[in-house]
Image (cartoon, rainbow, N blue to C red; front, side, top):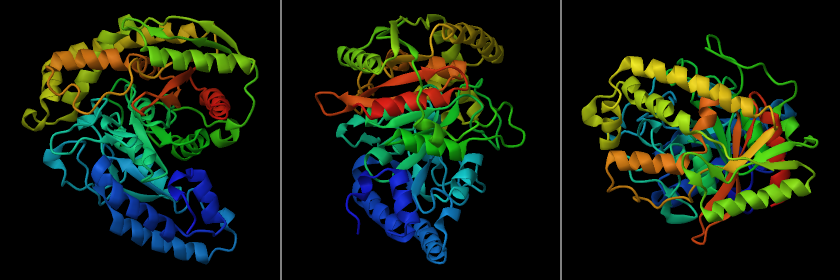
Length: 456
């Protein structure tokens, strides 16, 4: 058996399979054993489906053995992954992070699952999420809290914290997630991963439409920038009836990663209003990254983004999603019950969307003066599990806002953003930064992130 399979990227594992140096069954068995051994400490999975995964791996192993030209096989043929438990996989449970309904079974695949299967992936189960994906940590009633592989006292983030913990813990090499306010970038920040939130309309939400004012999108969690680019290639594309979409790029995102960006004008920020300055260790990460970019020949300017006017309408849209879920009060967590109670005026939602779109225009217009924005992913380091368990809902909401302030603005604008790891706290917990590009310009931040990845 090849050593250290858990530390290899999905593309490196793909190369081994296509060269027939390892079989899908061997690889799936390896990760199944790691899940069985390690997940009882991490709780990255809401549901584990090893039996069906091994059966699928056996079929793929037979196909591989009978294939002379393996270049005809999908790029991720035989690579294990898992699906966030907000999205249906036919024949698997779906709980939306709610312990009361964790035994209900999906009877269809959503659009990204269809694409994941077509790409050759093997689905190992469902990754844990906060209830309805509403919180940036996973401590849902009926489930154990999801923990950080680097330090079990800390959260793996949310709402895609299960996916992030599984990848960082070496339980799977790559995973899709979703981001409605930092829910891919935050877990990547907490777990030392690359977390890509693409532009609005890049990835379809099929077969459902959109009822979050356009703030939420699927995204990618991986160990390397190239892996996230390759997964974005898999997930991208219009599906009939999408309310909005983007044209396919001229070349694949994986091909684009290694291309030269040329000299860029990059704004950087260590302070974000209304919350204020980032924690000193995160401020240092920004300044160090800015210095590296400057040494690469890019032009750096310092700014202080002001998202003050966006907070209230964004929170209103976010709260309204709890009503839209249709979940009855009696099975919701106290936090989500409280959020739901704050959102009984239906006209309030439409007014908030309107206001959010006006402010988004102002934010996007800032990018006329620069190509990319470098800023903190979150304003404070990762929190410990249970850190806010004894706070009131109002206090918890304020803590969340103060933590995740740099992320939601770009869900509102629909701009692409990528979180990349840059270091660790004194407790050994990962931290990092994020890069934001103009709308429909994932290629630039992927290229820039790739440059940084090779300089840290």
